[in-house]
Length: 195
Image (cartoon, rainbow, N blue to C red):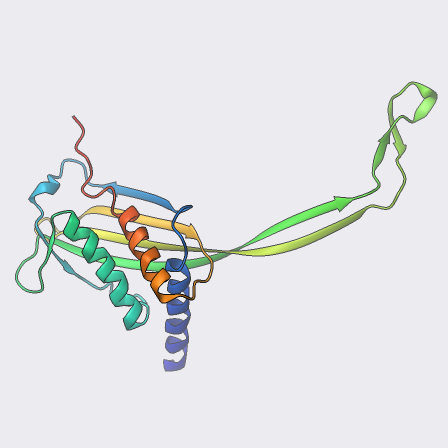
């Protein structure tokens, strides 16, 4: 049982590195929020963990939280480690893999021309046709940030960033990409009030 958990944690840590170790140019960001909420009243927040969720290794976990902290500071929020904060903030990360199938054909096939000299369709153009089929694994990573109003006991904001990912080895580049991703993810917090 412990071995299985350890393997899952290692796989998640590697997956998170893959998620965050890429540029953010093709990143898809979505967000949603509870209508009617005055987001200007939120001044403090506190981190919370999702029970039984897998998190990356301690170093990467700290980097993710530090990057989110930095963005929340620019939004006027202060982290509170004691007392009663206005918001509870939670992040989760996930990786999925899908197969993409491609086929490519060359040579042969049905030709133009054919019967009776009238220029109709038909006749075999000759030659040998070759079809190659190959698969490609597409790895997609996502990070979700959820915010809950502690007084209301309700979720008030959610942001999700999703991207096709590739491996990144340079720790400095990893941190820069992580910071860019969190800036893009939290761009729509607080949501703009419609007039």
